[in-house]
Image (cartoon, rainbow over all chains, first blue to last red; front, side, top):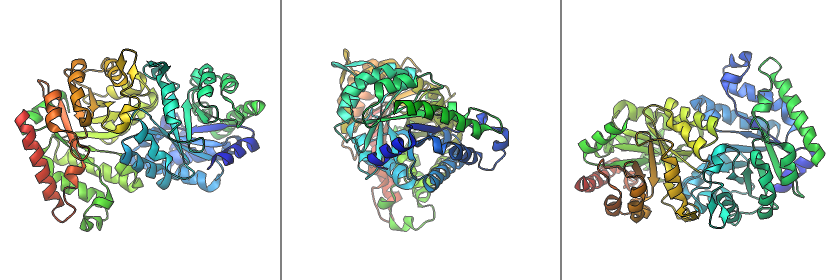
Length: 269
Length: 269
């Protein structure tokens, strides 16, 4: 999906909500766990219930790899299901990959060609030749980790590197490797107030914002400091939506939570 | 496998060679490609031929994920085959994972519990809580990226962060998160001369060294600057060994290459 299509979806649906599909069998309703492929059945119910209230889905690969081959199969089925039934939803593989050039190309093929994701999250530590291969696929996106939502972001990302912070250096360097049509950034909602300065470096790029909800970030602050004239935000919620209830009504409750957030978002658009 | 067992294997076999299992169907001998699971058949032949000349294997997950589900199945079969037939070889999943705490735990479960790898490579950009979950598994190892072998390592890793370079900060911070029994580091052979300074920071840790061979690093320099009293090195070669020949004799030639390197290594032990 290209940039103008994404913006069109956001403007049409009046929200910039991304639903994180992080299935954890220990948190699922019991009646779902009885299914042969409970991960896919859980996701399918969540997707059908929330699709009208969001513009993107973001499965985190860790939650599938943890269940071995069958987990990966559930991931493939989930992405196929979304692409077939909701082709206008943006699909982010939250995989945080990155390796030397020819190896990153292998990852890009895995996620863009095989899995048909629109975007993949990429860890920048290995530098340009680890990121650029993901930018060479027409209509596909690399979402580079800049300032993450976790405590550990203080360890390196927020350390002084010359006259700037490391994550600022990551932004300034990597924005030259691609453009606003193939490159986005991850900035955690727990650092929403830093979005004002970040917007000075990347005024036009889309930013994927995790950390609203379970991690405590504020949607209001994210919008205040992060919105740009093309919206420029995808705000992700995972646990707060998909585990809103552990009962028979889990999908219904997920839809209610997604709707609530979508409505809040509409105020800012 | 714990540290003393690893050192024992190295001392007994008189080498510290790790063979990188990075299967690329386009580089395999044609007669192998005809097999239903050519990746596994290729790996199996390489493993049987090289096992007596190395102490470790390192499949890079990108080369399996690029082939979808069947590729991941080949990875599982490969690891099972090594664990069953060569239980004294150290098994590194070169996956370069890393995410917020509970998600890193999912990756750790995937690689340590499901796949039964001894070690996994970890990207440090997200900081302490992205690395520590990998250190909580008895007898398992996190191998943190410090100074990688690619050109892009200049972009951030070698930039000044306060009064040190970023990779030095990664070493100094992360060494406090674990110990020499559960933590190793990646330092590329293309930066071998920097191993002398790195050894001042981490005198006792094992270092996994890629970049000898196809990438141009020198084994002599790596040994000169990197060896410690417990050897402390695992030197990885992938392409130079596994694609030594593309003919019927590919496994035999791989064994010859591995033996050559193992013999060179024995001089330094």
